[in-house]
Image 1 (spheres, one colour):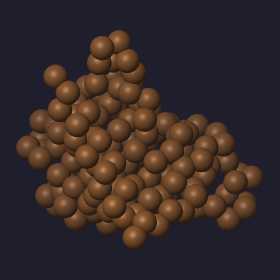
Image 2 (cartoon, helix red, strand yellow):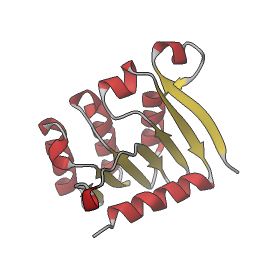
Image 3 (cartoon, helix red, strand yellow):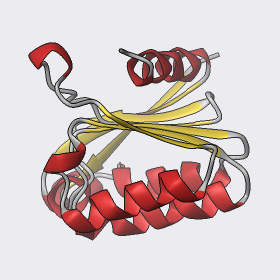
Amino acid sequence: MTRIEILGTGPQLISRGLRGIEPVIEEIVIEATSEIHVLAYLFTPQAIHLLDLFEEAAEKGVRITIVVNSLNSQHAVIANKLKYLASRYPHFKLVDFKGQKNRQLHAKLVIADRRRAVVGSANFTWGGLYANYEVGLLVEGDIAWKLAEIVDSLANLP
């Protein structure tokens, strides 16, 4: 059975009782036991704590696949941390999408154990996670498995 919860950022959305996108991402990453999938257009240094959580998960043996739109477009602190994680953990797969066939990867997804996924408009930036008005969904169930398959397919493009 699929369960869906609306998430948001921005004070008016949060004051309406929506859970924040960033705390829910933290929750599913911390609770992951086998694998994490991520599609990201942009990370900025204000989201380094998420990379730290990915590292903690990798330390526990959780397999991680992160596909970023363009590694060269990420802030140097982020690019260096991602490269470090990929070199340090053999089960940490970093994929530089590099505008495959002149197309951008603009999706924002975090999936834990193929059973819980956060899908939304928010980049992994201060604005996307806190300041902007963003909307996302926490999806639990078979849909999360299908989303992980999408990440796997994008991670394996030639």
